[in-house]
Image: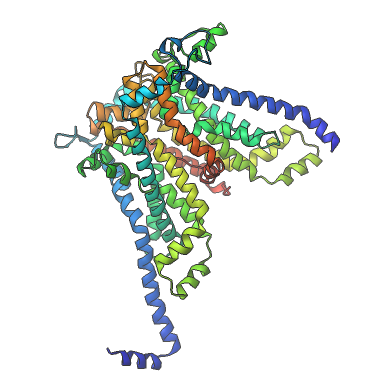
Length: 313
Length: 278
């Protein structure tokens, strides 16, 4: 078709027809551009997230040590790990760690946020200081606290000066879990403080003014204004805390290697050790599937319980 | 007003004292780290604790730097975290723009699949990921450290949320003026979402700088380690030389702390804005 014919046919065509024709090709072009823009991310996710997670499920049914040809073993890996006590103990310790760390963390963080939400002096300074541990890497936190919990370290020096019994924290099955939990609380408070502060700042001040006029006490305005309006934020904080707690890895890896006698062996650590120290990749994958399912369960549960009520804060 | 102030004052003072004590307690581990880093080995466990060492041993800082490639680890961390962050920002901004402002078949499915990966911890897919990176020949390479960390579901979500708020008319007007699609992205979409992008960049840099399990597996040669991995390896080899261990810990947190003090408001805002972390 020559140029002249195009021009003449365009002249002849109705205005509506031209517009429709243009719009169709325009839409097609937009679809292609949209897809092209998404493509880099889609490729990265397909290769480095979707494929590995599917492969985790697949490998969990095989006996594989990185050198042999994978041998299909059905549910044997699951039977082994759930039948013995080692992995089950690891699941319960992971929950113990998560609750032991995040119940105190969230309570302290909320209290801090409430204080910093008042007109207390030097607010920005206190907020900044409490946030410092958040930006320090877990490895440094673990290395420093390993020294603090040394038999003759700072913690025991403090206990000793008060005349309290001084255990050998990192070498005792009874105390090692707390030597992992206390540094975690220290590191995490600042993060949740900021989340709570953001939530508190979204509560309109007029509510408090009104309650003051009505003669409400501080406790009453906390109980009937702050708490209900902060609920979406608290829910978010609990979910984030739960997920972070269940996948914790670095503190036990650096401080105790899961010991003594497996008393601090969290799920991520046992997956790592099973796969890369013992070379049992199939069995480690089965453990990974269970870790995934546990986290999925809690995320879905949370959505069921609170998802519909959440008015995005 | 006067009465109000008078009634509030004791409480305010109590709060101020309380938070000062609490903050001081939070700082103890850091002071202990700094103090120990200058001590002689024999002084570490002396009782009562000497917060100010008898003699400041600066050699605790210089000796480890000579014995182990800390500078190389520092470079690796900086390079890997910067490159991954750049990749995350670009892929997230592009995909977020696509999911927010374009319509094409499969768009929502793609978005939801990517979002669903937020629920999958790295720990749950580390075994196949390691095998994949090994099979690609990427163990102990920068490509292996950077590229798999180049996509962020959280980043895509954040970008999409912000870009949904951009008026369509603006983009349409640019199109009518004959701007190219890439030109619109570069000159209109990116500048309009600067706040979200800098939040994502800070967040992603910190996440990558502190990343541990993944680099632990894919970089096992000394010269390819990142700082956290190098520090952990130094810890397991020199675990009894506490002053040197604390000295390298101080060095390791110094850059991040400096960055934090300079950008502290941005840091805290981006944390609050994001509400989630890696």
